[in-house]
Length: 446
Image (cartoon, rainbow, N blue to C red; front, top):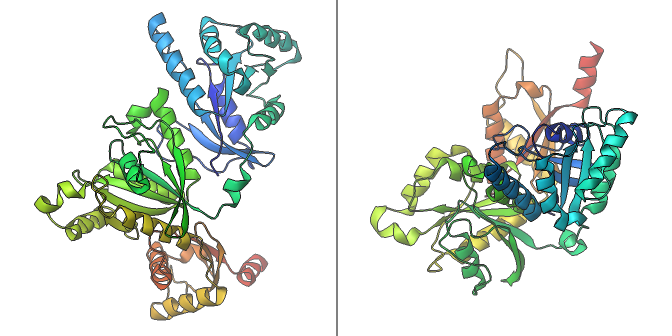
């Protein structure tokens, strides 16, 4: 399921970041921070009373000429309207209503059903009268809080949760493999989806960034149920710092969040870039299955070499991604497009696999006997037993006499051996090393 987005907007110095930190700073609320974003803690997953959501802190509106200010206000607010399910408009109750507040409010009134007016810096009971003055913004009852002290934040979050969209039971229970199509702008994502569908279900344009939001399409393919998620292109960080590009990035992350597998399209006519690697690593970090589709192969295959040389260069540049299968395709001509989908379905099914405990320990024993764990600082390291504790992605718990002494090189050896044993091609694996309970008790008794 895609997590709903709650965006915090407002002018500078009203306490947006303080409110952000207050909400996600709770020990039970933080799930993770999204990687690859330059601003500190710009986006995080939060939870309140069992409802999870993505919380986004937007930058303050930059002071300047009235024309520049209006432009920036329009970009920030329109972006929030386009992307967010709930918008928290934060105003400074102590400072009263400013011209910037009025500019923002005028654009939010049309979306008042999704907007909560937050009167921040209500630190004492005497400040409630100042908060009431924000009624004049025309956005309903102000919610008085003190983000710095935490006063009123619980009541505010209760209201936020009530406004979040209801989950779709069909989407939650569906056994379909959900496949997100990712990549830089103009790499051919919409053309790829259209080729699979056999019809123009997604707009195709040579203008990068045509797809502003994700578009889900269900289809039955060779007896398999598939949901294709076409997404907007991921631009470089500098190009998404504010406005619609920034919220396009957020929606792409939301599409990835609800997917099982990402088909990451790369441009065969261009060298593998840091941006390409960032997209691939983003999918792996989120625990999604990954297939790399080398698109536009028809433009370079006859002139510049073979698939083998490209694969070799790919693995040299990204050795930690060697488990990702490569498909050389042409969305324009339809070559190997269905092969990419077939691989993605296989990866999605493998990501859901459960390996019996006896089989896990059989493979672990074979790996241990072939190459025992090296000693560390004079200590003998033993891998005792293991089991799979989760799927999507597959997660294995390995008990040892000393987790801190299991070297990274040996952990990679174990991962490679288990991947080869069970064919987890394209599937990121998670490993947790934990001290055996009896060893832990012995250590505590000393």
